[in-house]
Length: 333
Image (tube, rainbow, N blue to C red):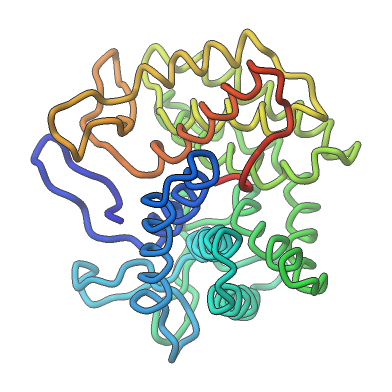
């Protein structure tokens, strides 16, 4: 899958291993709720690409991109690695192909080994040396509470294999994230920059969602939901991202059995989200979700990630409206 489609110039960005991982999860989710073989076949194709083309067996790692568009300098991202592993697991749950679980487990063990830092995780490694790259202000080049979503890969692998020792890094990062997340927002002066920070902050919520039944996590989760919702509503007249709408709506509904859903806020977020869906004669656009809206004008990028998040969020909203509060056919995409 391409990182996103430039509708303004009619061209895809380079193929991304992370976005392909997200797509594998999304297609597996769609296959579960629609029983459509085309969705399952698409999930298999995404997993096959990750297994046979993206995976660097010699280094035991997934690079950021597989194309020469990188300028010859390859990197591997901590966040991307977790998303890819979880994509492989999503397809494994649907197909039970043992090779997918084997690769996902190997990649998870390598992730714990290669990205380990002193009390932290290196956000980016330079390949082939696996040398830590300099940290930058951009969230994917830094490390904070939002990396908890990627760390979910260790918890998911432990659940799939029965080896609880693999999950230890997830619980370590959960404790650190709980201690630091309240300082993450706003983190910037410009409203647009705060909206951009809301996107990874919602990753923190998604990473914590499986633990929302724990009293300490439940209280922090409720506080974080309220905080994120306030910032979204404050900034949206100037800048609103579709993925943040989807993430926040999904974050409310994933934990509905533990934290009462603010139905009015959820309804508002669902309405905003639906407004981002593209209708077009161009099949690359039709049904997808625009990246966002700035000062009332749509941003002409359609990406698999907002689309995948929106699909799951709106499905969960549909189920919630029909009296289902815990029915998530797959873990969070």
